[in-house]
Image (cartoon, rainbow over all chains, first blue to last red; front, side, top):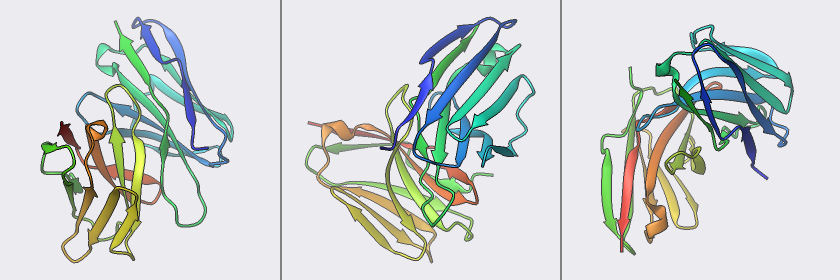
Length: 114
Length: 110
């Protein structure tokens, strides 16, 4: 099983709203990721969690706040977003042992900021 | 600075023929390379990978070739099928992060 699930599938929010994106995996992976993807562009790394600790923050604005409550869950809290933040938000996970580096992606949350 | 480059934005191939997607990289420290397939509005799907200590890896219709001296890898799909039509991303591993190319849009025509 290489499934990463994400909810919601679609989200429309105003610039003053607070919302959260959720990601879950049950593969026992201890590295989890948030990416942002705009149309016709490659995924752009936002955050990396390793063993539930934030290890990489790619200079993401503070209106995006990640959280890793446990080894299976990853959240992305959104507050005061801008219309240019509209994108597909992808979660991924990966093993942290051995020499396998495949990241498995979820289906994404299509976010529209109005 | 783009360390992984896919110089062909698009490729069209007839069904049954071979599709060859190319990827170049600049960082000799990359130790693992991956190909992902992506349909619109979906997450990327892992296809095949190769370690830098190998020069070929095969999985069914998909084969990845790595030429370390040229810093070049390619994905071969044989035979190509209409369902293969998607955007293909090449990626290189560096620590915990993946460096993605900009993608090649493959269209397989009947």
